[in-house]
Length: 103
Image 1 (cartoon, rainbow, N blue to C red):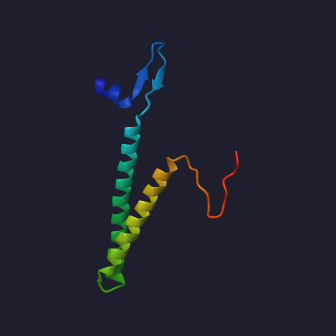
Image 2: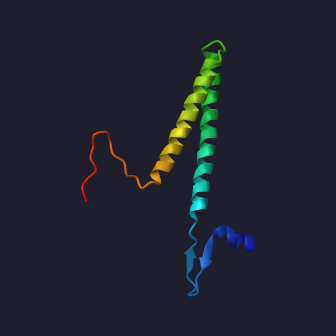
Image 3: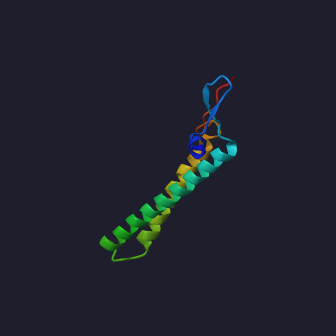
């Protein structure tokens, strides 16, 4: 029973109202890294798979389509991870030549 209540991540206050427990910043960062690494592995594997298929079907079993597919998959995984971590900075971005509004 204790494992079930711990997995829900809820804490009861003295008034009896159930309030969701806040995750620590370490846990949030750990979840982001886990998501990024799994995303990188999956997208790299998919890119490699496409490279193998194209290598067998179109390019007479050369190695370069597999390498290109792996690179495209890893690059896409890296870009998604980069976007995830930059989004945590508050989303303050500006395009080239654009000025941020004055307060």
